[in-house]
Length: 130
Image (cartoon, rainbow, N blue to C red; front, side, top):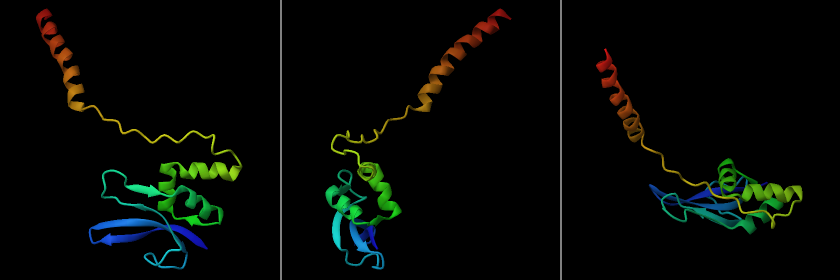
């Protein structure tokens, strides 16, 4: 049985990973059948490069992705396309899967300061009536 998994490359404390198709009994860092992409967690841009067409070829042949690889394929939208291909739907007409947008959170400090100001203004008015 063939698996799609990552092999560890690089040096100590600076690992990179290659996505390869390997036989299930091959050791993790062993020689893969074919190279399908890479993942470099230390890069700020272009951390991940996948060869989609080759991944689809291996999935058609019955290769099983590991959980980590499957999660990455889901994030990139490749897994959704694969499931549509299995159902017989037209993938070419499918809109590209949008990547999630990182949104900035508002600071709680600013929000609390705005709410505290009207409450402080209302407090002296109550004292004046008493």
